[in-house]
Amino acid sequence: MHNVTDAEIDFILNDIKARGIVTEELRHNLLDHICCILEQEMPEGTAFEVFYHRIIQRFFTRELSELQRETDQLMRFKNFYAMKNTMKYTGFFSALLILLGGVFKINHMLGANVLFVLGMVTFSLIFLPLLLTLKMRDGGQGKDNVVFAVGLIIGMTASMGVMFKLMHWPFANILMQGSLGALILVYAPLYLTTRLREPEKRFNAIVSSVLMLAGGGMLLGLTNTHLSYNVTEGLYQAHHVLDQQQKQLAASNNLLYTKTNNNESVRQMREASDALYNFLDDIKAQLISTAEDIPVADAAKLDLLQMHHPENTSAVKMVYLQNDGPYSVEKLREQVKSYNRSMSTYFDADDFVILNEEDVPSALTLVPILCHHLTQLQMQVEANELAFLNRNMALSVGK
Image 1 (cartoon, one colour):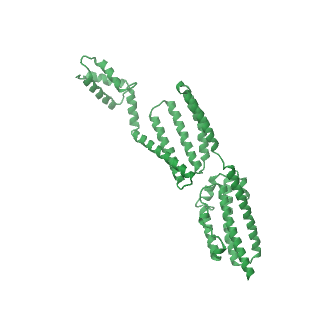
Image 2 (spheres, rainbow, N blue to C red):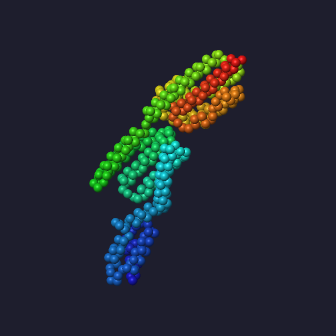
Image 3 (cartoon, rainbow, N blue to C red):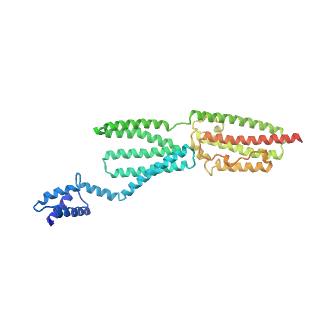
C-alpha cells in the first residue's frame, strides 16, 4: 500500500486547482478520493505523477473543470430534481385538463371552461417556464438557448391567446396574431439561420422551418375568423323576421289602445309594459353603441346587418355583465321582477305569460345574439299586451 506524502498532496491540490476546481470543499473531496485510490491501487515502484495522471482521467469526460461547472449548477439549482418532477407532473396534468376541456366543450358539458382554463394556465404559466429554466440549466450553447427561450415565450403567448379566443375574452386576437407573427417573422428565421451552419442539422432545419411557416400561416388565417356565413345569415334573417313581427305587433297594440277603455288596469298594464320594453331598447342601443363606438342615438337606428364589429364581446362585458352598471343583467332582472309583480297585481294569471329570470340571458356572448334574445323578450311583452287588450275588449263588448 502506498502512503501519500505531503509533497504529493500539495501537488494534487495545485494540479486540480490549475484544472479549474476553485471551490475549496470540492477540491478537498477530490483530494480524498484521489488519495484513497493512490493508497489502494498504486503499485510499488510506479512513478507517482505517471499513475496520478492516469487515474485523474476517471473524474471527467473532457476536462476536470466539468465537475466545477456541475457543482456550480447544482448549487444554483438546489431544487433541480423537485423542479424536474414538478415539470413532468404539471405537463401531464395540464395536457389531461386541456384534453378533457376540449371534449367537454365539444359536447357542451358543464365544467368545460373551468377544465380548459385551468389546463391552459398550468401549461402556459407553470410547465413552459419550468421547461425553459431547466433547459437553461443544462448549459447548452448560448445561441441555442436564445432560440429555445424565444420559442418558449412565443409558445406561452400563443397558448394564452388560444385560451382567450375560446373563452371569448378581449385581446385574444392580439395575443394570437402577435405570437404567430413572431413565430413566422422572428423564430423561424432565427432557428433556420442558426442551424444552416451545421451540415448535419441543415436538412432537418429546413424541413422544420417549412412546417413552422406553413402551420403558422394556417393558424394565422384562423385567428380572426368571423361567424360562418350560414350561421350569420340564419341569425340575421331570424332577427329580421322577429323584429318585423315585433314592430307589427306594437303597431297593432297601439291601435287597440285607441279602441279600448282607458281604465286604471289598462294604464297600469301599459306603464309596466313600456318600462320593460323601453329598458330593453336602451340596453340594445348601449350594446351597439359600445361595440361600434358610435353615439347611442345612431346605435338605436342601426340594423344588426350594418354592424362592423359583431364579435366585440368586450361591449357585452362592459355594458351588460357589469353588476353595478345601469344596463346590466342584474338591472334587467329587477325590471323583469317589477313587470311580473305589476302584471300579477292587476291581471289574472291567464291574461299574461310570466317572464322567468331564466329567460334573461346572462352568459358572455356576441352583441347580435344578445340583441336577438332581448328582442324576443320584447316580443313576449307585446304578446302579453295583445292578449290582455283583446280580453279587455271582449269583456267590454259582452257588457
